[in-house]
Image (cartoon, rainbow, N blue to C red; front, side):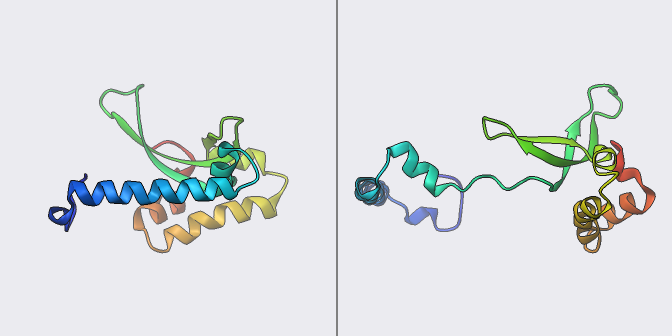
Length: 134
Protein backbone atom coordinates (compact mmCIF):
# COMPACT_ATOMS: atom_id res chain seq x y z
CA UNK A 1 0.00 0.00 0.00
CA UNK A 2 1.27 3.48 -0.74
CA UNK A 3 1.81 5.88 2.13
CA UNK A 4 -1.35 7.86 2.78
CA UNK A 5 -3.51 9.22 5.55
CA UNK A 6 -5.48 6.46 7.24
CA UNK A 7 -3.29 3.60 6.05
CA UNK A 8 -2.97 2.42 9.66
CA UNK A 9 -6.64 1.35 9.50
CA UNK A 10 -6.12 -0.95 6.50
CA UNK A 11 -5.84 -4.60 7.47
CA UNK A 12 -5.19 -7.72 5.48
CA UNK A 13 -8.74 -8.86 6.24
CA UNK A 14 -10.12 -5.61 4.81
CA UNK A 15 -8.06 -5.98 1.62
CA UNK A 16 -9.14 -9.62 1.22
CA UNK A 17 -12.81 -8.68 1.67
CA UNK A 18 -12.46 -5.83 -0.82
CA UNK A 19 -10.80 -8.14 -3.34
CA UNK A 20 -13.60 -10.72 -2.95
CA UNK A 21 -16.31 -8.07 -3.49
CA UNK A 22 -14.57 -6.74 -6.59
CA UNK A 23 -14.18 -10.26 -7.93
CA UNK A 24 -17.89 -10.98 -7.36
CA UNK A 25 -18.86 -7.72 -9.07
CA UNK A 26 -16.72 -8.45 -12.12
CA UNK A 27 -18.06 -12.01 -12.40
CA UNK A 28 -21.68 -10.83 -12.38
CA UNK A 29 -21.05 -7.92 -14.76
CA UNK A 30 -19.08 -10.02 -17.25
CA UNK A 31 -21.74 -12.76 -17.25
CA UNK A 32 -24.39 -10.13 -18.06
CA UNK A 33 -22.40 -8.77 -21.02
CA UNK A 34 -23.07 -10.16 -24.47
CA UNK A 35 -19.48 -10.27 -25.68
CA UNK A 36 -16.10 -11.50 -24.54
CA UNK A 37 -14.29 -10.52 -21.34
CA UNK A 38 -11.94 -8.40 -23.45
CA UNK A 39 -14.90 -6.60 -25.06
CA UNK A 40 -16.37 -5.93 -21.62
CA UNK A 41 -13.13 -4.35 -20.38
CA UNK A 42 -12.86 -2.31 -23.59
CA UNK A 43 -16.38 -1.00 -23.03
CA UNK A 44 -15.19 0.45 -19.71
CA UNK A 45 -12.36 2.37 -21.34
CA UNK A 46 -13.39 5.01 -23.84
CA UNK A 47 -11.16 5.58 -26.82
CA UNK A 48 -8.39 8.04 -26.06
CA UNK A 49 -9.34 11.59 -26.97
CA UNK A 50 -5.94 13.25 -26.98
CA UNK A 51 -5.85 14.37 -30.57
CA UNK A 52 -5.12 18.06 -31.05
CA UNK A 53 -4.04 18.68 -27.48
CA UNK A 54 -0.94 20.49 -26.35
CA UNK A 55 1.37 18.92 -23.77
CA UNK A 56 4.23 20.48 -21.83
CA UNK A 57 7.21 18.21 -21.11
CA UNK A 58 10.50 18.26 -19.31
CA UNK A 59 12.61 16.00 -21.52
CA UNK A 60 16.10 14.60 -21.43
CA UNK A 61 18.50 16.61 -23.59
CA UNK A 62 21.07 14.07 -24.75
CA UNK A 63 22.77 16.49 -27.13
CA UNK A 64 23.99 18.86 -24.43
CA UNK A 65 25.55 17.49 -21.24
CA UNK A 66 25.78 20.94 -19.64
CA UNK A 67 21.98 21.28 -20.02
CA UNK A 68 20.65 17.77 -19.36
CA UNK A 69 16.97 18.74 -19.61
CA UNK A 70 14.86 20.76 -22.00
CA UNK A 71 11.33 22.09 -21.81
CA UNK A 72 9.31 21.05 -24.85
CA UNK A 73 5.76 21.79 -25.96
CA UNK A 74 4.19 19.14 -28.17
CA UNK A 75 0.80 18.44 -29.64
CA UNK A 76 -0.82 15.11 -30.31
CA UNK A 77 -1.50 14.21 -33.90
CA UNK A 78 -2.88 10.69 -33.83
CA UNK A 79 -3.21 7.49 -31.91
CA UNK A 80 -1.42 4.46 -33.33
CA UNK A 81 -2.77 0.91 -33.61
CA UNK A 82 -1.43 0.12 -30.11
CA UNK A 83 -3.30 3.03 -28.55
CA UNK A 84 -0.17 5.14 -28.06
CA UNK A 85 -0.44 8.86 -28.62
CA UNK A 86 1.98 10.33 -31.17
CA UNK A 87 3.48 13.69 -30.17
CA UNK A 88 5.15 16.22 -32.44
CA UNK A 89 6.92 19.46 -31.45
CA UNK A 90 4.51 22.38 -31.37
CA UNK A 91 6.38 24.11 -34.19
CA UNK A 92 5.16 21.31 -36.50
CA UNK A 93 1.59 22.50 -35.91
CA UNK A 94 2.48 25.78 -37.61
CA UNK A 95 3.42 23.84 -40.73
CA UNK A 96 0.61 21.26 -40.52
CA UNK A 97 -2.20 23.75 -39.93
CA UNK A 98 -0.65 26.66 -41.82
CA UNK A 99 -3.47 26.67 -44.37
CA UNK A 100 -6.20 26.04 -41.78
CA UNK A 101 -6.03 29.10 -39.55
CA UNK A 102 -9.19 28.14 -37.64
CA UNK A 103 -7.73 24.75 -36.68
CA UNK A 104 -4.43 26.33 -35.69
CA UNK A 105 -6.17 28.92 -33.51
CA UNK A 106 -8.26 26.20 -31.84
CA UNK A 107 -5.09 24.29 -31.01
CA UNK A 108 -3.15 27.32 -29.78
CA UNK A 109 -6.09 28.53 -27.67
CA UNK A 110 -4.96 25.89 -25.17
CA UNK A 111 -1.66 27.70 -24.73
CA UNK A 112 -3.43 31.02 -24.12
CA UNK A 113 -5.69 29.36 -21.56
CA UNK A 114 -2.72 27.93 -19.64
CA UNK A 115 -0.73 31.16 -20.00
CA UNK A 116 -3.42 33.07 -18.11
CA UNK A 117 -2.56 31.12 -14.95
CA UNK A 118 1.08 30.23 -15.52
CA UNK A 119 3.74 32.90 -15.87
CA UNK A 120 6.34 30.46 -17.26
CA UNK A 121 4.09 29.44 -20.15
CA UNK A 122 3.01 33.08 -20.63
CA UNK A 123 6.66 34.12 -20.95
CA UNK A 124 7.47 31.35 -23.44
CA UNK A 125 4.32 32.14 -25.42
CA UNK A 126 5.02 35.89 -25.56
CA UNK A 127 8.61 35.35 -26.70
CA UNK A 128 7.75 32.63 -29.24
CA UNK A 129 10.17 30.28 -27.50
CA UNK A 130 7.36 27.82 -26.97
CA UNK A 131 7.81 26.60 -30.53
CA UNK A 132 11.34 25.33 -29.88
CA UNK A 133 12.96 23.16 -27.19
CA UNK A 134 14.14 25.39 -24.36
